[in-house]
Image (cartoon, rainbow, N blue to C red; front, side, top):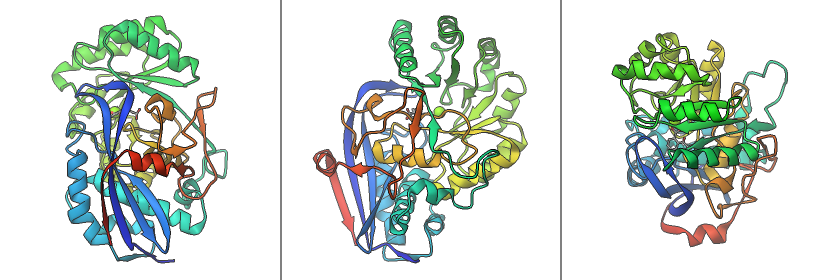
Length: 380
Ligand code: OSB
Ligand code: MG
């Protein structure tokens, strides 16, 4: 089956968050999200660009993603025929970086291909994946954790954690930064002695902070995520050698090759895989496979996605080596109203049930989507 991309539509939507989200690099209250719709033979596939509003997580942001897609990616794939979605990434591989922009389009083509085959996306991406130790097929329910941003007070953080535990979430990730780290993590651990807890620094430290970070070893954290620079692997290896707590790599893993290098030098013992950060499903699967071979567990990260990106993350997290609870959680934690129907919901045991409809598995709420679209560009 060939896929000819006959039309590509970019949209930007604006969605206010129900609660601000603060990391070591910024605080945001609303998202500006680029969506990509690809069409072939009357069928549409959808993808979401996971770039943030500012170039602070990595170098991409809403505007750069729009321009790269409009001027460089779309012209290279429009009216081209692909054997399969896995080939799409290569067509824009000579564009340096901009993996989230490229990944948004790539993911849309996987969704399109799954729909053309009448298959759920999770089954489609799972094809050829090595089986889990005890089961033959993909996971039908994915384990969920939550990522809780920096709050205005420790009391507010406690309240958030209570709420999420009551909802059933299996692990709590808290954001840290200098000034909101060892003390606060210690207080959280004291208040919630038994929970699965981890901390994410989003590159807020350097090796010079090793002594401070070592104090985190006292709190039985599952992992410390990306403590050092966004593009640094070697220093993470130097830090890991001094820490008992496993380091989880996020920002600095953009490809399977980098994952292999990081694993070889023991720069981290867990990998957070984000679909956009690695440029789409084909590379995400390769990162997954490299980690699985090395005995390194992975989990699915989040970028405050709307329903489309969220549904793609759910599909990704069904692959066998996604053994740890991820950052993919219910729509209602982010949005008063999501763009998909039904919204993503979490069971009382802190899981998301995988849906069996073709493609990403949810209906689009078109009317709402149109009402929050602030610009649109259709190319054919
Ligand atoms: O580092 O995982 C991160 C959000 C924006 C940018 C970076 C990160 C995050 C999150 C939120 O932790 C995960 C989510 O709830 O989508
Ligand atoms: Mg992170």
